[in-house]
Image 1: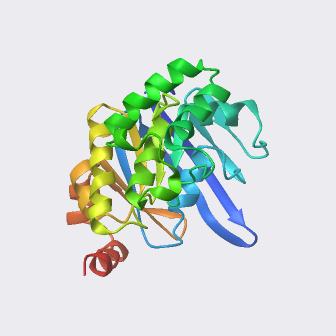
Image 2: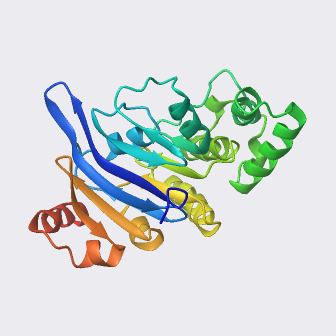
Length: 250
């Protein structure tokens, strides 16, 4: 498979001070798949996700993604980092909506500013995306008027407005109650059916089992398990994974 069909991660290391967060990680992630990143807190999941879009600069190794190469020493404003961010939407646990902009304005801001999309075209696309994620009735609402689940669905629509190749989702349901989690996960499953690449840091084992084609487990900065949901969640190879599953599954 060529670089147009996979994300190639080659021996990446990331440190914060003396602490090694990612320790020589290598992975191939085919485009068009849903990949769940699991593992104990502090294992490196969110850091790996942030390395993929240049939010965390690498200390060692490189990432080949969407025709770009991310290497150590690149600035946040480098051409490669900016190109990756235009092609990969990032969705955060805390939504990060602009509080001073209404819902529709949150969704059209990046296409207009970054892609130079005409306002009328951006609004038309935003309306369709908000309808798709079940937020059509809240187009003119302010973020403070929305529930957590509604904010997260707006964040998904905002990321989709950039017409990305995929979405990087960082524990986007962890702050939501069970009903609101279900709303957001339903939207993600719909996107999966469209063939959009989804790479998700999650603790939702049921969603990983149901929706992911692949599960990668990170522990202490290394890959602990890597395989299908059935392989990893039902027949783990390592005792450390079995202990983790017992803890999270009760």
